[in-house]
Image 1 (cartoon, rainbow, N blue to C red):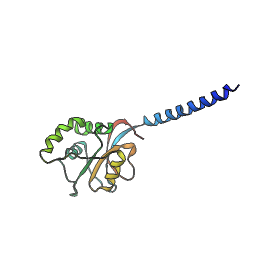
Image 2 (spheres, rainbow, N blue to C red):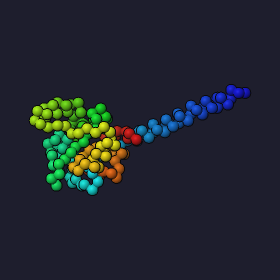
Image 3 (cartoon, rainbow, N blue to C red):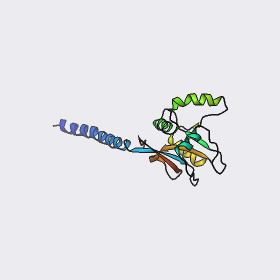
Length: 157
């Protein structure tokens, strides 16, 4: 019966990707909070959500040691950016557009936007005074986690 070997190969060819897809789906559902990060070795004491909001609205400009604060955002369309913005600023990124239009006429620009979580980690790790946020599951030894925000977003790994 030549049909049986073909059926076995087809079954194996279909089942293996299906099982691998299920495994990656299980990994994708790992939940992660948001890690607020600074450069390694730099400690920020008593950082809370209110102070973080002042930093991201550009109302607080200097760290206690006099170093200029450089906040870093992710693109507005990313779920983590939306969760961070709502949790810290009380508004979605789109709702913050009006705030930044008004601030522009006062000479204020919004925080720098990095293209990805990895870009945020690299930028924060190498820029004195920088602060950013990434999924907690992606924060590593290149950065120091100074605040965790629980939001229940899936880890993008």
